[in-house]
Length: 534
Image 1 (tube, one colour):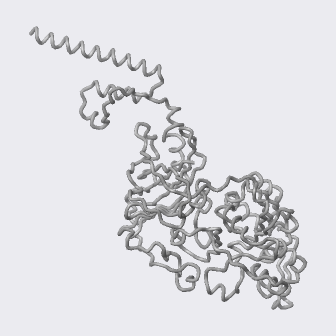
Image 2 (image 1 turned 180 degrees about the vertical axis):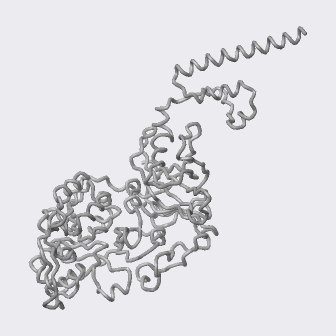
Image 3 (image 1 turned 45 degrees about the vertical axis):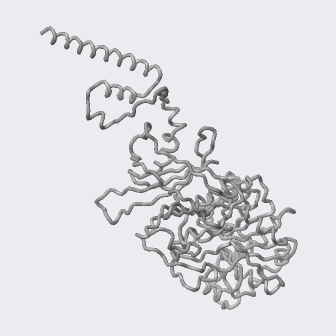
């Protein structure tokens, strides 16, 4: 009986000590601002509750290692929770509520690398994954791992310091399309010093009054040296082959305004101007630095006409051997001055309705200048899935049709040029089955990579045949969906908070779960994030 009372007394004493100790630690935690979660682990340890310990297993503290608990403000700024977490939760990413998440922290090793070779990394790219519920709170106690990875890349391009005053670009387009195109123009024009002359084709529309000064001010807020103007030609000019009763459009046809950009640009040219670039509103340059280096190889003091053909042989047979403007057409100032007084006459003399065709006829009729082809400019007359091109590792000076004939977030894709210059679309092979096309995709091949000739372009776009051979051949067959799993780039973040004094650039690649095959099963997207040191 006495033994029973002694055991009970000891039990009561143990409980009393435990309660006092818990109260003391709880007070200390409150004084130091520790989260309530820290106290819950203590109570789990003090209570003999096997089920609780199984649900929340806690590793034993290492000997001699202090248990440092950051307050919530430190966690939101220095860890995964905070900016990183909220970025993944953005609505525009359109991620499923639950995702399978993987990230790698990449240290770029800048040097004189062979950009066109596929670098071989023996270890896998996709190492460990974590299941995340984006509707829940961030897992502060166990953020996803970010295994380090060093990749050899070319040097970064020079920072923009208004060093491209020698380039002047011209576009003729509608007010609405110019509003939509601003973020993409900003990618390659902001802070460069290059001028942009824009003829707003519907500026004189009587039903919709457009505020050109406001649009110009908006572009200049993005540090783009843009000049917006209404068309000087108010009604289309007749061309060869038109009948007397043909109604001439008013406002003037965009194609004629496109051709007349030559004069508009000359009026805005400065003594520093060397090249006039006549563009479509969906012409895209990943960066101006490689374009400027390419143009430097040609004598701007003499009449010069630079560009590239269409990539479809049927188009060339229909429209002729000329510079196709979607890829960008470049005229030296001497050639532009030679054509300037003849522009209206050239419109009247041609039967071709397109601005590119008018320019071709005008140059051939009134000068001895011939077209010089420039590698790396792409007219991109391809439709459907353009992944075969973007995963081929080709160097790109310009792209076209990226928001109509096919869809690609080109400004996000090319944002990596700010980190490692010509590494845009550079390729790395990981393990035996994974290929990274930097800025576009991560592809995992079911049967591995050894049997694939990666020097050939996968024929993914519509109607791949010998019409495209002279630009894109050789091809390899398109793989079936179950033979290749693709994570496509959907977002980048170049404004990530500094961590440990190191600025970061983040690429988010997503493999979207099918919402159709299994409608009763929750879709779970797979996300791979590459975090680059800058």
